[in-house]
Length: 330
Image (tube, rainbow, N blue to C red; front, side):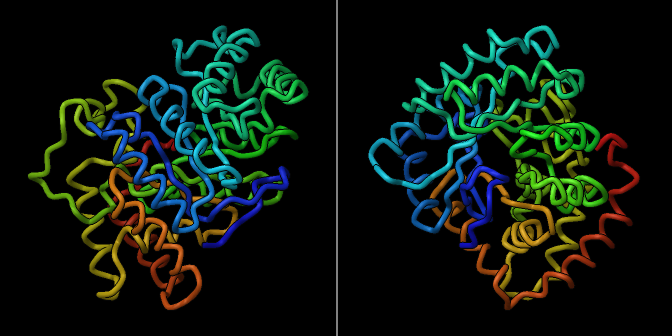
């Protein structure tokens, strides 16, 4: 597993990490035993980045990670959590007092004195652009509450605004074969600034797993059911904002272009991780096999697969099938 610098922190993190939204049971039920097995399998395959948030299962994801890592002294794992969605997404709620309360809760959940990395969780643009936001975060760093901070964003414009801030460690943004706009400006700007990029929703909520069909159904408490059209939060978080059936067709074309021995999710994760400017890809996993498959995709970065050939197919399918339907802000 390739290990890459986490911005200017002096830490290294794996090219493929683990997203843990699903461990909060927001994608259907996941037992704690199954969640811990996913974490263990990921670590055993070289993963050194766990990405979580204080609202994933109302802290369940953080707490499971905290208990798991407490049993592994010297684990070498970087835990990137997020804050800011425990209250309505209003500018006034992103205050120093709330930052302190939220980080204190995450410290308790994870069982640590200092949080490795805290990311603002897709806040309003005005928060990303405000000097006061970074003053408050800098104060938490100075006090040792957090070691570093970043921003998770919805749009490329937000990403560029965050990258311009001198103490931002990372930006987390949706990037996959269905969402190519970050290639144009965000990835080059991040590379120039020394800001790490975490590519989230890399498999488009499973559309790029190659396993879904028109008849596939999801549980009522799975966001792929209740947020398919943006009913609960930004539509781009579910299937990357792509129409489900159009996404199925695009995924099928991508899969058909691959050699028999390379799966679509493996090719997708390796392609994302190979793009200049991407530091880590953070797919989720609900079971051990998924965790192992995600991590094993990193082997494709070391040769034996024509990543640039797949890149050409990605752009051709995107331009023909998806470009016109993607929201301009994404």
